[in-house]
Figure (cartoon, rainbow, N blue to C red):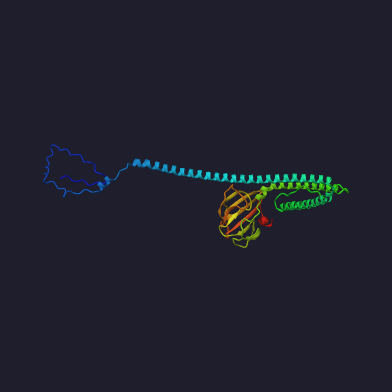
Amino acid sequence: MDRETPASNGPRPPSKPRPILSNDTRPRPSREHRPSNENRPKRSNKSKKQRDYIRIPYTYVRYSLPLLFAFLIFFVFSIYQLNRFHVSELIKMEEYYQLRNEYTLLEQEATGLQYQLNHLENRSSALENMRNIQADRIIEIDEQFSQDLDELTRLRDELNQRLAELVERRDSIQNQLNEVPFLPSFTTVPIPESTEAGFSYNPIEQLRYDLIALNSLASAELVAYQTLAQSVEEIKPLLENYPAMWPVRGRVTSNFGWRQNPMGGNTQERHIGMDIAVPTGTNIVATGGGTVIRATYAGAYGNLVVIDHGMGMETYYAHNSQLLVSVGERVTRGQVIALSGNTGFSTGPHLHYEVRINGTPVNPIDFVTLLDDN
């Protein structure tokens, strides 16, 4: 019998029929002497199982993987672009609604001012007409002379009193503005102490002279108020940006000036700010409007926010646990900019607050109490 070849791992190729040679004289077993199926050696089932699998050429796999990877990259990039577009649209819509609300408020304010102006014009016209009527009645009706004279005298006294109150109030406002440090001084048009007026034994003529003098004083006071209002409008952005409140309410653990080194040792160091102890995660607010020029980790300061308020003034907020603003962002007074923490060189959770004028640190206590005092 022929020898059986061992089974290989792969599928067996079909065997070619062996040609019968003419000189092959080997005896052929008869059908009766051939081994039955039971006596034949069993073939392994491994080749049969392998034939059941779908064989994929390696070339297809090698070219399919880059295509699949490229498709995944394109899909992720598409999702990223859609997310950016959605965020951009949300920001634009928010800005649009904010501008629309501001426009509505300005329109309402303009309407209110126009209404007040019309009311004042009507009142002025009514007063002018009343004065003319009264003058005609004084000339025409001699019996009402005394009554009208007393009324005009009372009006003159009221105008004098109101004028004095306006001067006092204007001076008070001017003094309060001049007391704010690092702001330009305010001056207004001086009001004359007395106005030259005529004298007459005729009570009506004397009253007319007094009214002329009061009119002159009122005109001068109006000019002074207009000058003061113009000055206030000019520095209104400065007042809005001025750091004039506490960045956070808490216990002041270290003031501005010389102190013992809190990190240990007996050395003295100059503390250029003010430390306010608060729990971690407490809201830190901007003490004035301005632009964020720094929002990052800064070594000993830890997580630091620096706001430029203009006028050469900058405020520092250090040792935060989390920053809520970014560089270039515009903030307003009272806006939350960070959460307190214990980052950097710190012995406990607190806020280190600094105020600098043209790069020179100054005592923050002169600024945080401005709104409390006034």
